Figure (cartoon, rainbow, N blue to C red):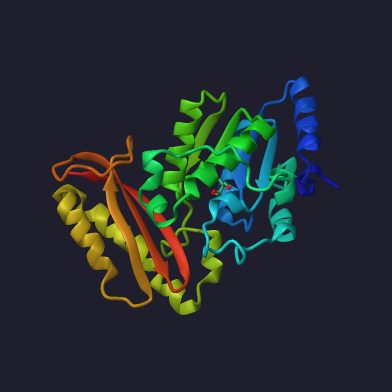
Amino acid sequence: MSAAARRPRVIDGIAELREVVCERRAAGASVAFVPTMGALHDGHLALVRRATETADVVIVSVFVNPLQFGPGEDLDRYPRTLDADLDALTGRGVDVVFAPTVAEMYPDGPSSTRVTAGAVGALYEGASRPGHFDGMLTVVAKLFGIVQPDVAYFGQKDAQQVFLVQRMVRDLDLPIRVEVVPTVREADGLALSSRNRFLSPAERRAALTLSEALRAAEAAGPQGVAEVLAEAEAAFGASETVQPDYLVVVDPVTLLPVEPEASGPALVLVAARVGATRLIDNALISLR
Ligand code: PAF
């Protein structure tokens, strides 16, 4: 079988993964890491592509982390599609897929040590999903400790997640470079997400509201924050299918809401429930 068509090796044990990484490092290889919860789409594959361009060994994790789902959220229905994920990764230069069980990651149940996301972790996604970012950072810290990569790749679609991971790496002095890869979109603008598969055809059409709101925000940027918010909110109209959760204009450096008179680069964050599915998206805009 040619190297290009090789299916990645699947490892489910922490000790075995560490051994493989140690061996490759001893031979002088650099390691890139792409953490995922599986249900891979082209957005994930863009992260993998960047990883293969920059390092000798590429490790992708597939782990649906129960710690980052709150009560009543979609942990049970979150898609688990390891075989299809391995097919998607075949021939893409991925060496190892680390797919541990929950018991392997949390042998004593929910781990007693948690990373806390701090004040920004309680805003936006964190306000709607209390504890989500503590759970996400805890598993990312564990995965970083297990894989010990030189570089890790995250998608810009999860802007708040990216911000918090970068801050954790800085605050805890983790020797890992975090690289952010632009959001991959469908031709009509919908940001790729593992949750898009839950959308009915009508919901799929309605979900375009998020990217349309962001486009409206971008166009209104030169007129200032109030106009950005007004135009983006107008894009939501009175749809019953799409229930907006938050729409905020934030400083990309602090992730805190900008002042009404702000100018320069800003990030617009949006979240909405489309039917039973919660979607998020964001765009970098230029104010005034
Ligand atoms: O973005 C995700 O898929 C998850 O939050 C991550 C980073 C893999 C942690 O579980």
